[in-house]
Length: 489
Image (cartoon, rainbow, N blue to C red):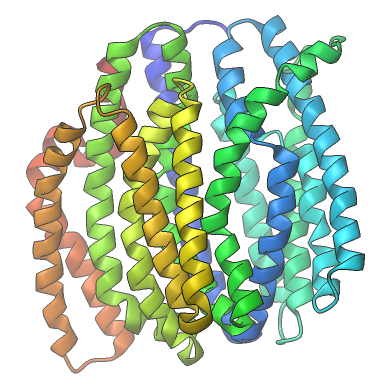
């Protein structure tokens, strides 16, 4: 990829951000369509069965990818100006990925037929997820900033999956069909993207050293991934093993709703990681710091009202959205909403500073500390408190992770400024929450109350922040103005 000028960079980053936002909006909308349907058809037991078995296969997928998603993205971004070097890096990393994927497929099959008896049928279908790792080259296309291709592919596949779910998942016993649609669509999506590689890669011979040199950095990037998964995925495995599958179902649906706004908030990090990695390789340190300052303020502007909004509508929303069987999910959503703040703040620090700067040690240590505290809380409290304990463990883990990461870079970035800039948004989000709280006393249908709260909250928050919006975002070009300002620093 040849060097492009300032205007070209601006246009490329603006397009990538817009593509990502549009895709995240799609991700936001689709679950709002599928989750209530699937919850009512499969019930808490069916949702829990899928979630429990997926949580297990997810670990095999993580090991198969061995931290390659972040490491590969960063490595490709830094070498993309030299096609020879980029191709050599890709082939070395990808060969390692193939070997790990094949090995984990074999290990997973051994696990299914020796250790898994209760959910063997569903676990066999989940094998497609591990197979899909062989063809997963998203990291390469993110590294060269080809977001349009990956997002277009994902959009088509997700819409197709949505249609198939409504056509074929009709009974509580259709957990297997539901699993086949989701795992099969992931495999199909990766194969489709894989077919575009030849346009960007120059095939050449590589030797053993070209593969071996990537093992150590991949393992370093893998450690935080596996550690984070302990409080992202292990919660569900522990719930299913020492509590109940129904508790997994409650937790799964609550977490799905929390992930919806989080994907939009973290969209900026996905775009900025390869861009900042490339800027750091060009020694543009001051520009990077200014970008992070703007990114943090923008992310806090989005995050704080979302947290207050979820807390306000969670209990009535869970019953109206999932069905009366999932009333407990509303309580879990209130606990988990707190993690949005820690995840959003940490995402900027992690994807826009620690990973691009190759500060892998801080990233690894923070994730391990989070995993340890989460495991301790889970093992002690899950037997008695079930999914509530899993939420508490996740909140404490995310708090510890972002605290350590923030402490480790306190001398490099202006943390006090980030906090100070966030205070006005916190106050205005609190005012918004206080106003819409009074809607609870209206004697109207729950669905109408939810809609009234959401619309009112958006209007109130926009009015309270109109000065920031006009100065930094400009309503008529919401995204382009923000990206232009970022690039101009």
